[in-house]
Length: 152
Image (tube, rainbow, N blue to C red; front, side, top):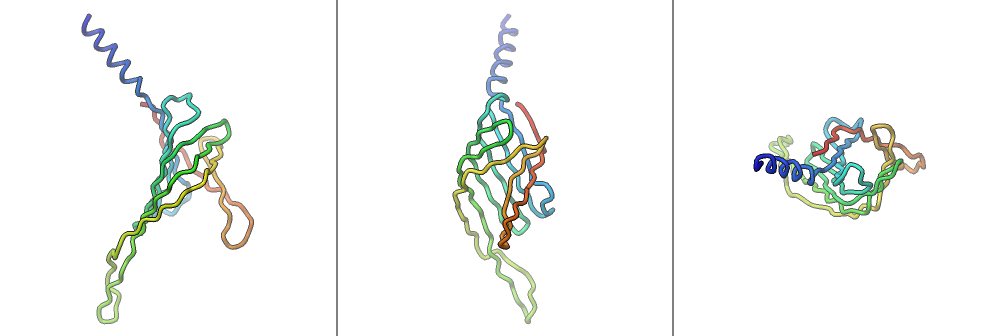
C-alpha cells in the first residue's frame, strides 16, 4: 500500500509542475546567426505566459530579453521588455604594415526597452513585420519556424 501511495504522489508532483514550451527560430537567417523565441506556459490551455528572446551572431554580438505575452487565436502579443545586447569591440594587430590578427578590446552592453510587439500566427510559424530603412514604406515579413514544442 505504501508503494502505491508513493507512486501516486510522484505522479501527481511530476504533473503539477508541467510546463508547455515552444521554440520558434527565424527562417532564412544567415548561417552565422540565430534569432529565437522561447514561449513558456504553465498549462497548455493557458492564454498567457512568459517568453525569452535569444539572438547571437558570429562576431560575438548577442542579445537576451524576457517578458510576458498574451496569446489569441491569430497572434501572440509581447508586453514591453528589456533587450540586453552585448557588443565586442575589436582591435586589429598590425605588424610590418600587415593586419595579422584581431583581439577583443572591450565588451559593451546596450540595454533598450522594446515596445510591445505582435507576432502573427500562420500554420506552424509566426511572423512579424519590419520596415525597410532606406526610406521605403514597404513592410516585409520575418518568419519564425516552430522548431521545438514540449510539455514536461
